[in-house]
Length: 56
Image (cartoon, rainbow, N blue to C red; front, side):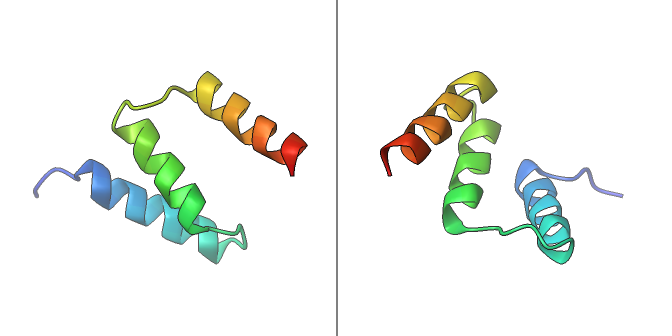
């Protein structure tokens, strides 16, 4: 069996989340991809999200 790629794991996790009733928006997908790519760490991403919520 071939190893699972990051993209496959992300797709599976997001599908599972959607089936459980959690909203999976394009922004959520982009943020997850940024985490997987190492473009942002969890602490920074949380700060970004909280900052956006406070602004608008």
